[in-house]
Length: 377
Length: 67
Length: 164
Image (cartoon, rainbow over all chains, first blue to last red; front, side, top):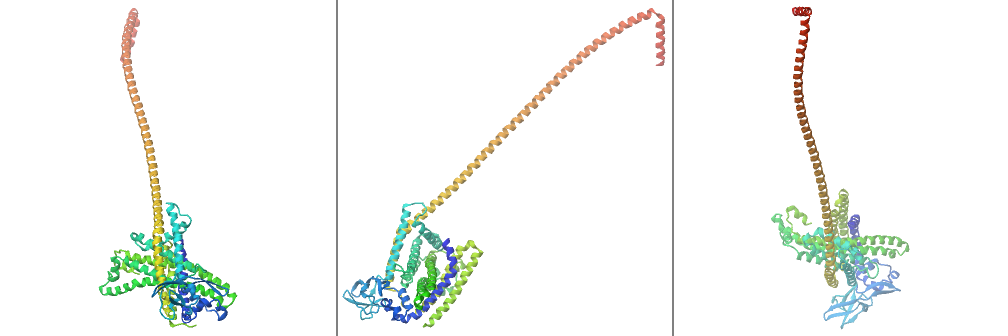
């Protein structure tokens, strides 16, 4: 299909580029790691003044963007940060405490003490501490990423429930409107991702989950690429989100694992007996490394994309020259376009590998020796 | 520019990954040129193997992120 | 580092939201959409199959029509051939019987003619004999009336006889 051709055309470009993006990230994280401790925190208050005062530090801006935060910083207006206050929800030693993030007054240095529920809290580097201690309450705040997550989820539900309404009203008609937009995507997931990986008998069991997974990742990737308020959160580039998604893959795969699947892990058939324990060890590690690489892949790709775009925009401020802006804009446009593709590609790869994992779990192979060597790449 | 030795390691990992994925892409192009009717299957296999190799590179990157 | 340390809050929220999404979409979006798509695919499949079978039926009908036509043509030809054969046979028979009849008539005519001829010949013979007798009687009478002539004739005859 068209999408497939699109992928072919660009994969040779993107995959190495993905690695380049990643290496870019290394550079930034390397020299950001030391200063970020004390610089990034001032960011929310100081960002507006930063260029005037002490020169512009792109690491600070980038790290602030990449990380999660308790308030959603929308823009700076006339030297003041305009941000959306979000609820801070804490599970303390004395129970649940809720207050607005605006009570920190943009302080992330731990100076401003908030009194709530008879306790005192400070915000240090976007982590909430009991004031004056190094102890942290459990933090279930609706942060920027959580809000983005909820908005993304609402968007997905709106799109697909309204598309589903078309099918409820019209049977056996060609799709129109929203349905005609989402149907090829749904069929792409079902036929090009799931069908090749999962045996036909088990297909219907897994397709709904794979569809949810694919659109969840894709829509949130795209929302992350929107450069202004309702988007722009680095949600799918946050390791917690990718951790949860990878954990779901791990759990569903192993819960559905057949006897055949477990036999292949703990006592590989068709291999000389002395090798079997060694293979079992490798396979057992493999059970965890596969979802782990899923987690890292999505996280690193999306984070690297955000870092690259922000770095290119930062060029203007680094050189403090308006003449840099055309080049910066062209490069940003180019990378952003590429990131649109990466957003779809990473959703595809994550879903594809998850589908293959499910497929391997439920597959009953009547294998001879070399068939299974192929089955375990 | 400050940095740690891990960054060099990550860079080395990325070189390997770049070469590997470049090779996959090139070979896939070759294969598609030779058998255009099998392009769908080749694409899938290509993306998957590229994703696996890329995963190795990303491990290197994450090591450097770990500080 | 911070970047690769997952935060508990986001883990919990992602799990909750993602599970809700899986449930909501699974029940209210994927199920109706996938079943509708599958139903449509099946309907299209069935329609195609029906069209195919209709076409096959049509083809079969056409073939049988042709078969019928061919059969009719063959039958007609057979009938015509049979008629022709019958006509030929009849003509031949008629010819045969006619020629037989003709031969019969001819034969009887021939016998009759023969008989008539024989009768005529017999009568002619009788008349000639009578005439000869009469003539002989008249000659004899004339001869006998002129003995020298008779004698001369007899001599000449004798002469002739001697020559023989």
